[in-house]
Amino acid sequence: MRRCLPARIFQFDYNNTQMLNKINQIRQNLEAATAATAEAVEELRIKYLSKKGEVSALMADFRNIPADQKREMGQKLNELKSFVTDRINALKEQLASGADNEAANIDLTRTATPLPTGARHPLSIVKNDIIDIFAGMGFTIAEGPEIEDDWHVFSSLNFPKDHPARDMQDTFFVTRTPVDVLLRTHTSSVQTRVMEKTQPPIRIVCPGRVYRNEAISARAHCFFHQVEGLYIDKNVSFADLKQVLLNFAREMFGPETKIRLRPSYFPFTEPSAEMDISCNICGGKGCAFCKGTGWVEILGCGMVDPNVLKACGIDPDVYTGYAFGMGVERITNLKYRVKDLRMFSENDVRFLAEFESAR
Image (cartoon, rainbow, N blue to C red; front, side, top):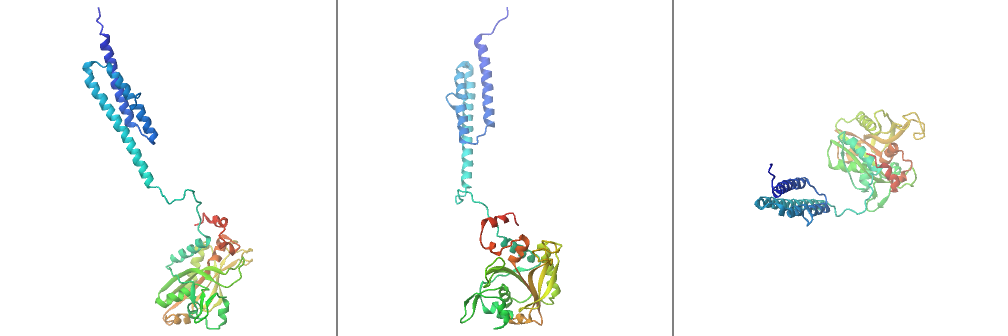
């Protein structure tokens, strides 16, 4: 007759194996567990450590373990409970540390209401483009005051007293005695200040705002912006000026741009010229913008008059130079086809928003 094992021994083997498997399973689950929120950590605690949790259930089953195995199994259960407790505490600390880092990175000065991003003003865009082009040719930036004296704006630039040339520019005077103080009518005053303090070689561009007493309209304003340039050194020629301006025109308006120089008059340059570019709107074929000529005037230029060099303490027998000046509004009109100059100073956000994608 086959002898059967006692029912008690069979029950021990079954419960013992089942409990070991459950212990190992709980350890594996918690080792892989993560928690992104405090609620998730609490759910893990309830699942394993609460009165109805899985560890408590194993503790309840411990009474079924035979007496001679209780010590070994009790040790494993205690190790499991310690592991589960430590693991859940570690998840809490990890979560708290992440929250502290996130709080530390919060900008408390930031507005609670998101603000729309702005755009650079079109005049700033074009002015910076102009400066960048000439900087690539070795020019540096020079700046000066907007409120100037007569000497730097007129007299040093070969404008004699009561000379008709002074009538070319309607001036805002601040005071007339004991000396004339005025809002500068051109940034050429910056050039004279640099020439007074610096010996050649001089290679500068002078960006800035200027003022003239003119009626405000779609084509004129009482203030506008200029960028002027000056280069003084030995053996500087008109051919050097032409090449620099050709490079500028092609960088600003495209490699196919053509230029032409027409004789003109400025008190501070001799010879003087106006420079036109082939119309970038019609490609030189003729349109309403260029009035059917295919050409658009963009700047004035010329060789620095020897009298200007003398007035600033530079020997005209040793040095020569050229100067040029352009209106930023004029260049901006050509690039973006803005028909009304007043739009540049009205701060209409609808107008400015059109330049959000501009460079």
